[in-house]
Image 1 (cartoon, helix red, strand yellow):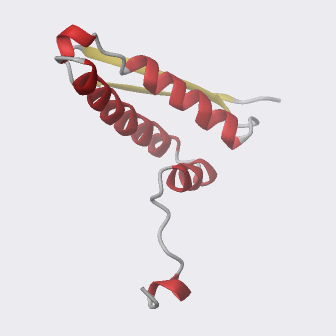
Image 2 (cartoon, rainbow, N blue to C red):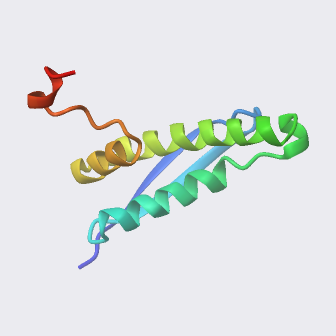
Length: 104
């Protein structure tokens, strides 16, 4: 039996508009598939109007920052250790292993 769960996050986007993001996932789905769906949802929610953002460069920076924060929040809300670890690996936040930390 497939168990479908939901993470719903509300907030104010960078451009000042309120939003609610709905992250659906199945506990039976592969972690990489769940993560890809979360990424797409975050990107879709964080899309900005180029003119309102003040140009393409600013728009991309704002969208990227919004997407990264929303994705991190959604992953954390699931409390699924494998998804949290996968996110840390994908974003380069994986801490150094103790045996290598002293060598740095």
